Amino acid sequence: MEKDEIRSTLKSLIEDSMPELSDVDLEKDIVKEYGINSVSIIKLIIDAENKFGVKFTDYELSLDGYATFGDMVEVIKEKLDSDN
Image (tube, rainbow, N blue to C red):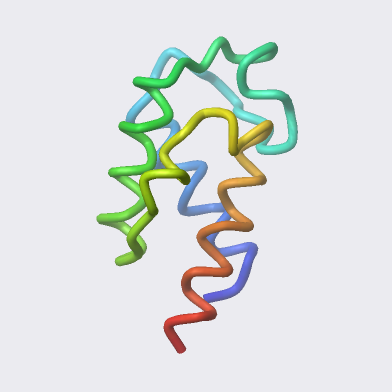
């Protein structure tokens, strides 16, 4: 899967799971710009695991690992590439 497709799919997941966020920029700081908390990021990660068929480690469930949603795109891309 190409990175642009991952970005588009993740953006749709964000809009579905966090409808209060509008026109999300995947490169903006998710805490400062969007007020994302640990519970929100874990929910999004679970949605991403189901959508992309990947598994995040316990360490990767931490909000500290993602300054932007773009960081999550990178992790998903790495996981998908390592599965192939």
